[in-house]
Length: 114
Image (cartoon, one colour):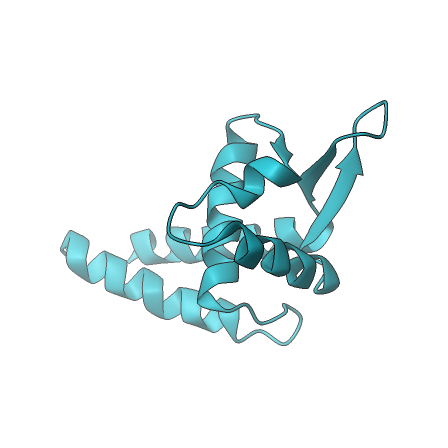
């Protein structure tokens, strides 16, 4: 039986393999952190407005978050959706986002199978 520490190290190793997949775009640490925070919110059923996204992380400036939202959109990992009046935009996952998190989930399953 592996220790929790060993399981986590195995997960990290498997997750690195997902990051290296050619069909998934490369993300820097800030982009990956934002995606993980967005995933937690999406999983909880929350809508993330662009302005909310810019204020989600205290140690990253709103301007940096805004730039990363643009790069994540360009990579196909995020999309924007408008409310019914078109005045507020929301950050939403894409099919590629779901593929990324599915691959990461598979890493977690594989790590715990051993």
